Image (cartoon, rainbow, N blue to C red; front, side, top):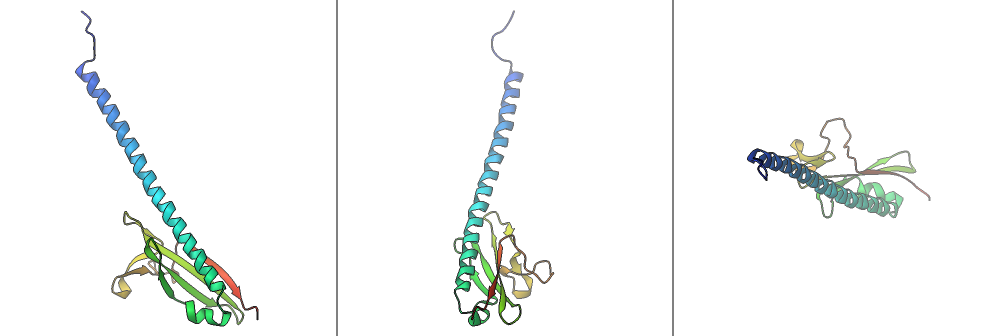
Length: 148
């Protein structure tokens, strides 16, 4: 005699396949949310870096080094900071580098940003790998010339 319907084994196998698919979709959704947060934070940081470069360009050449060199500023809307480095390149040229670093919601650091053991574990941009350069995927460099 032929029975209509599904056996318990078939139902359990189908449920297992559905759970596996739901776990995959859920992990994909969480990855997309993390990528969306990274993109939003990257846009915020890039805008603030550009704004800082433009502000520096509008400053009197003779005041740039004294006003901005080694200045640390909070990144608005992010748990991080930006650092301005001004390097004279001759008498009439300055190299200005603005670097950003922050911590994502999940705790991952963007750039060399984190507790600095040389500064009472102050959370800041610092040279994590001791290569004399603070690195970040979010930095802008501009050469500013004295036009006077």
